[in-house]
Length: 91
Image (cartoon, rainbow, N blue to C red; front, side, top):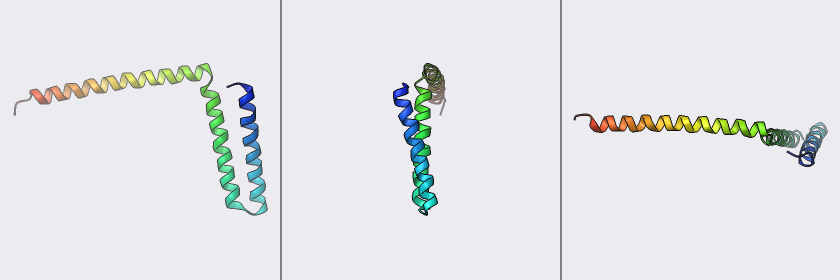
């Protein structure tokens, strides 16, 4: 992810987290906690977006999807084998 998108994402959400701490200190604990949870979620999402947008992250995702596809093909073969054995079994 380019720095021009990453920097405002981290800085803005860090400020939101700071504001939530200030609101908690002033007495509105519920609003402060909700705002803090939102800030932490946003920071996590910016981090995940940043790591996924790297070439290594994309490659890891493609490898995981290939593994899932292979497992799905194996499961489909097992199901078709079971269906054929059930169909050919004497009644």
